[in-house]
Image (cartoon, rainbow, N blue to C red; front, top):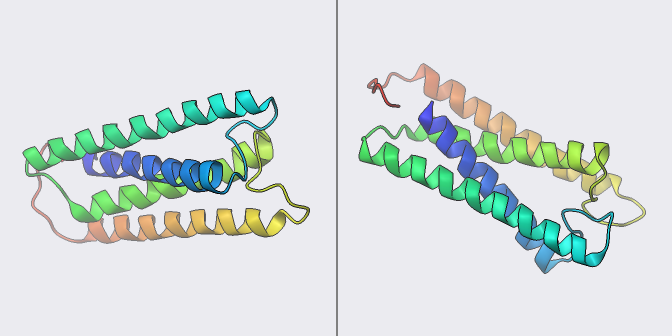
Length: 147
């Protein structure tokens, strides 16, 4: 379970980092919260960036503990990473973009192609993570009580 959680936290952190860096800072497509002033958008980006950073650090601390215990299971860890990144992206694309309307991926008249691309990539990451997890569960491995 620790392998899965460590990978998932790092997956969330990486997805948040890519979203923040590429779409918020480099492309200027949106802020985390676009329903207020530009200053509120920048503050919300900072809070979002901190969230991603904390998830990354927590995932890496758990990974270091797994290494120290010699309990790293690469299949479960990578499945966690893909599941975490995919879940974060799907949550962002559905709840934050559509339900709460905090922001859109990009403000253009035909947003559907951006929405579909964003969410399909998320589902593909979730499917790949699930497939890796199923494969890891089928493979025999040495059981470790802390893994």
